[in-house]
Length: 297
Length: 170
Image 1: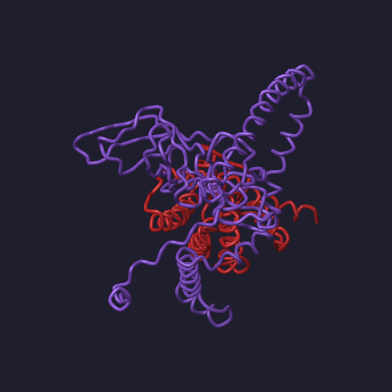
Image 2: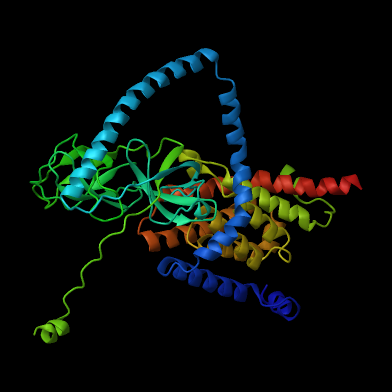
């Protein structure tokens, strides 16, 4: 075999071994650059234009099937749905009016207290195109991209709570990392007593966990966790999860706390992308020892 | 052995580039179907099996470089690390090209064991990269390797018979 291969070298370019080494090194370099520096996002979005038609074509039958199903809905179910929606709408309208007056009042109060006006978030609706086909990661792709002014880092939620965060933006698509992705962190606060913590995604299961909470911490089953807003990325007060299970074992320094996300992380097709991340006041410069020496007059 | 008769026909018509391209785009399409849950775990890697078929049967046409490029496309489609699929498919193509003569000599049953080895190393490369980057190994991922190997049998039948049909039509 060796002899035939060395014969091939003369007329067919480098041997397979040389090619293997070349492309392996190239791949490893690419992966290193991609993982460490994220320089390749533009190349990725350029190539996505090639791949996108194939992906759209693949999801087309399912979309058509769903469309056909929608078409054959019976009239009675439509009528039922209409009445319930109307009732819901009336209820909501009352609440909306109340909320608007409260919002006004709140802003006035804040102005009086010379507090910084809290940023108002506007949201745009996006539809999930498909869930990521990687068994390892918990991500979905939505149909709004940089063409619709979506930026990396924006928060994605539904009507019940936080769902995830935009992590990568293509021209017409963007990738949402769900809160249940392993090690994805959301700064939270317990609604009942204001206790601050950070909720981490658990990876394999659709759960979140609170880490580094002392055994004696004041948390109960059923406590609602909302975003604390102190990271400057998530707007404060949005529901994140409900505490489901607490294990306090005195042998370990930290309690083991499992929570279930309140947002439909694995359920719905429509999501809201909050369209702006608030500007955060700049972090003060850390005291530099040199400056401290010379700066004191 | 019935397998043997099917697999070693007298003349196979030269394969057109269009046929190869169509089969690989079709495989990309099948990979892109909205698989979920258990089906995603059990999904064979259609692109890998199609590439392996062409690397063993037409090693001078589809080689390591093209497989690498298709791997890059797969990376974009799957939003995996840039080069992760490319690395795996490079290893796959190398296995296919180096073992191509041996695999073409074998009947289907013996081929399957060779193919399992090549696919296993491909899946292992992908999993090792994931383990290095994310620090976890998902063992159920390797189930896809077994289904991919099982896919080799119908797929090579299909391609072989399609190449024969072209001869009959003449």
